[in-house]
Image (cartoon, rainbow, N blue to C red; front, side, top):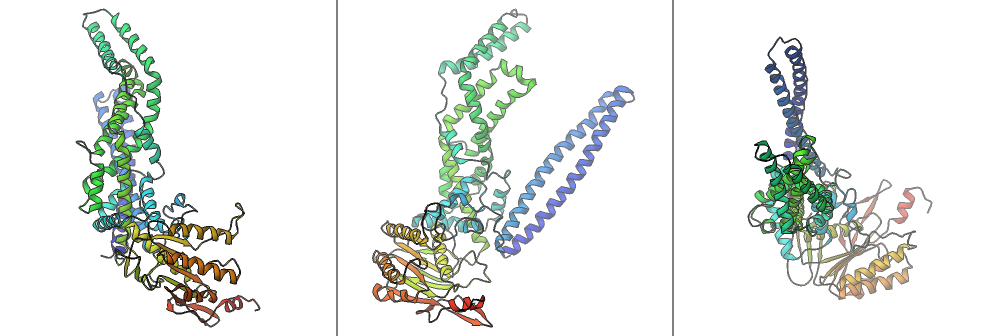
Length: 592
């Protein structure tokens, strides 16, 4: 089945299951109300009128309790099926390119100073991140964002490719992870969780631990001895007073530990299910085996260790029960539970960052696997060694629907390291730059690319496409562009060869200065081994190829049909022969 057919079939099935569960909830609600009414009637018949034995009251009471439990289970199942419906609805929206605003845009990861994030539409509504991201935790979102913002080493890229290829067909696994727990994306703060887990635990002395166990035992023994008539009641208040004094002595450490532990422990419990899936479902690809190794601990798996912490926190909360309160005092319940929780932190706290990293990487891999599944024709790029090179056949932009996407071949390296792209307004020059840049970002994140084929060496990306002025900073567009170009030149001196993408370079100054400055900047970037595309609608800049040596002119064309400008978005060799600026002005009614 095609991805669309698979999603549609599963979406219909999950909607049907949700409706069936909703109908069952309504039936259980009516039965529960009826059982409650029968219970009340039986209560009156048994105790007021004495028409039936009193034990009969237990029958409707048991039925009511069973119906309440069944209602809760069905309600949880119905919410779970609702998440399944949303999972496939979002999948269909991505296939239809109607996902904008329905997922996480990752706006918090957008750094205006980043060399390409804003220029390539990585974050925000309708962005590449929103298209890719299926993560349900902040750790997963942060990992995916980091992969898009930072090119990975070739070994890491190949490991991710193998893992994504392994996970691509595992739709059941991706659905399972989407259904675990409630929505935890905005709930769990990884930084706060790691800070709690790795902070120095309270380490009581051996004397304090011994007293914490001995005093409850002594109190219980005193009560037992009094009940058996062995001793009088006087040891009981003595033991209780000793417990109270000991509890007050540790109060300054116990109470802060209680306040610190409740929320992080609950958050870890939400992550335990994701870890359990990772423990049992990871495949044999190198990236997945590495994840398994990262969370592997001697003996008990992480999910079971977190379950132990969850039980300790539940036991700690039991002291709030009014019925149990007196017993909890006798047992020094809060103190001993806190000691157990702090012992858990001492034993397992250092592993929590590793567990979060594994969850983040697994969710990022699953996000890329979903994208690979939804676009089966998108290949994995081939990373090659040697001089800087980018050889792309049929490059298209992943944010443009396939039926509207016009693909072009782009080859950089060797005798052609720079393409000077000329053409009229709206002809596709900027889109070509973004297409090349986004596909390189995907390639170096370990994802499939929108192309028929792509070979490239590791590259750093620097872009000056979306440059704006700033009233707050008192910065003109030209000055903002100059500063960006300075950062791109500095990036060219880094460890990786640079892919530079410059749109309408230096358009904010006069043609004389623009020609001299643009040629000098591009020559500097190319001389250092960089590859790049430079767009312009100033035909004078197209002549810079004569001074660059390893540059080639290409262009986009347009034509007028019935008073409308038409574009085919095909890149052609050579310099554009005409401009559409006057025609566009006349088309909107300006007299020129």
